[in-house]
Amino acid sequence: MYAIFIQQYSDNQFTQHYYESKRMKKLVLGIMIIWPMVIYGQNLQLHYDGTGGIHSDSPSRDFVTATFDFYKMDDHGSGWWFVDFDFNDHSEISLAYVEIARDQIFGTFPLRAHVEFNGGLFNGGVINNWYHIGAMKPFTIQDFYFDVALMYSYKTKSNKHDDMKFSINYSYDLCNGRVSMIGFFNIWTQDTAMNSSTGTGKTICLFSEPQFWYNINRSFSVGSELELSHNYLFDVKGLQLYPTLAVRYFF
Image 1 (tube, rainbow, N blue to C red):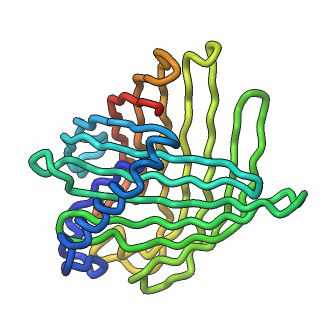
Image 2 (image 1 turned 60 degrees about the horizontal axis):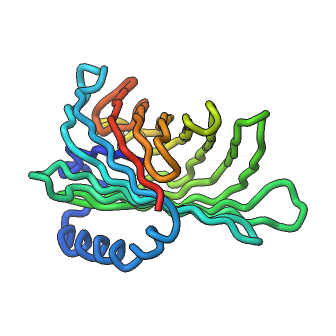
C-alpha cells in the first residue's frame, strides 16, 4: 500500500488544477469496471492512520486508506497492480493512487525485464505520472523471498527527467504461516523542486512500507503497516514515520 498523503501541492508548479473532479470520477469508474478482477485475484486492505508522525513538520493524519491488491503469475512472467483510496475529506475519497507493474521472463536469462507505471489524483490536482523501465531479479534466502529491481525513471512535468530507482520487495511467513511479514524498500532520485518550493537540482528519496500480519484464517488477517519515508513529502525534510492499524481480507 502506498498511503501517500499529499498536501500543499495546490501551489506547486507540478500540480494541474483543471479537470480534477472529472478525472477522479473516471478513475473511480475504471476501478469499478475492473472490480471483478480484484475479487478473482487477491485482497482488500483497510488501514487506519491516526498519527502525527515523528517529525515536527509532519502533517497530522486521521483517515482510512482502502487498498485493492492484485497479483498474477503466468508462463511469461508476472503482473501486479494496486490502487489506494484515501478517505480523509469528510469520509469521501480525497486521493486515488495506482501502480501497475510487469516482469517479463526471457527463456533462461537470469534477469527479467521490469516495466512500471505510477500515478493518481487528489483533491486539487494530480500526482504526475512516473514511468519506469529496467531489470528485476527474484531470489530466496532460506524462507525469505526477495526481488530486486533497478530502473530508469521518467516523470512528467519534471525539469530534469533523468532519474533512477532501486526497489526491493520481500515476504516471509513464520509460525507455520500464522504470521506474515511483507513489504518493500524504494530509493530514487527526483527534482529537488518536487520536495521543496525553493530547491533546485536533484535529491535522493526513500520510501518503505513493511507490513506485519497475524493470519486468523486463510482469508482474514489483522496487523499493522509502518510507513517510513525520507525527503518524500512536499516541504517536509527528514525522516517521517507513520504506523497504521489494519485488516486484510483475501478473496
